[in-house]
Image (cartoon, rainbow, N blue to C red; front, side, top):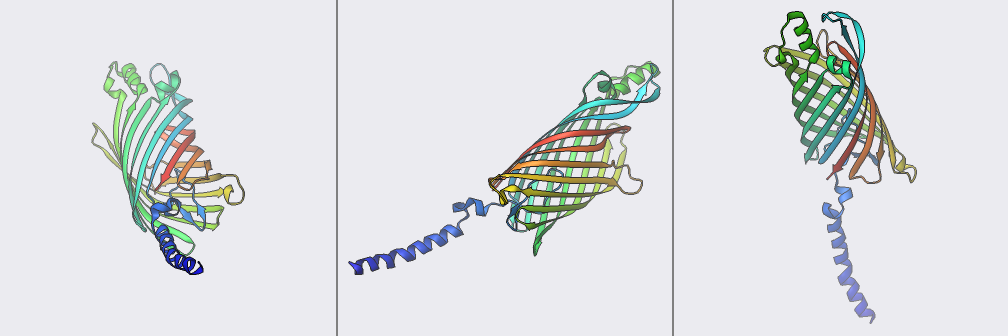
Length: 321
């Protein structure tokens, strides 16, 4: 009987060891370990929509943004002449769809579609701010390398965005001052092409904490339909983010994120200055899924001379393969 048991063990144990090796070698059998989630030093980085990480991923991301803000702009008399300034209110809505594919460990590329809308939300604001609808599409590529404890990458984002604005104030002023009702002045169409080469780095000093920084160059080509004029704008962009995962130190699967980004013109460029500050809360129990809410504040210009600030909230869902 002992001889039979020994023969069984001799036959079974090698087969079991081979099966275990095949299981470890097959990513489909260990989906969590094989996923391209942004993991470094045991920390899974949480995605901020204003600061990109250097990780190359196969992922799909959906973002829904809702915002409410105010803009300071000119106030007009009954003859259409500016007589000071006034504060106006507006609402904003945007959707982001992004897919990235990791071709190699060091290389990924993807595509993004963004739709956006803002509009004044009361009588004076609808007249002075009007509304704007935009639909943008972009491509991106990212190549990276890990230097010890730091993950790095260089990347390039290129996007095109036709935008259509409805400017009621311009039509009314022309009607009052020139006695001409021209509906064409109410519609402003322009095309924005953006090229953004950048560098990114991430570091996790310990499994609960992740730090990310971006630095890049911004080039925008603004073409106004019907006019033929092209405006070339140049600027720099810097962003940083920190996220803390409480699941690494407790049983609470919650993570917190804080991020900041600034875009500023170079020299006398007409590129608008944009400041973003955000804070987010994320569900961190599953590495293959990132679900979070990012709330923030933005300072920007809807269009000259409407200097604006906005409070917004973005709900993001991201899945990694």
